[in-house]
Amino acid sequence: MAGLCLVLGAATVALHAATVDLRWTHSVQKTEWREHWALTAQGLVLEQAAVQSSGAGMDPGEGAVYRDGFWVWRPQLPPQPQLILTRSPYTPGDWHVCIAGQCRDAGNYFPGIAADQAVTLKPCG
Image (cartoon, rainbow, N blue to C red; front, side, top):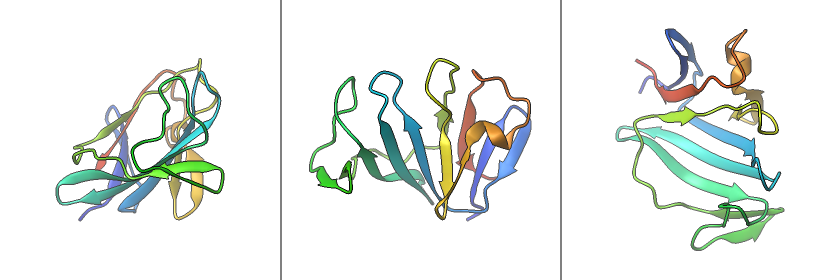
């Protein structure tokens, strides 16, 4: 498998990874949400989700367990061909793209990107 890429228009950045953690702060609750995605032959699979607290559409999923300050569960979502990381200047911070424990804001991969431009996470190639 080729790995994951971030895409903005014609620009593509290879992440050199088959798994990625996405983290962001909810615009209303101001608490962190985390998702662990893996690239498979079927597409991107959401293997785990975690949220610090519930409310404003952030309720933990079925079977969630409280661990290390987060409600953690495995969502039942079919494989996705890509993820569109919608960005907004009205939310606290950017999407954090984490690979092997190293996190970087999605916008930092594309110098000069506007705060409201979406970035796409998808298989490379």
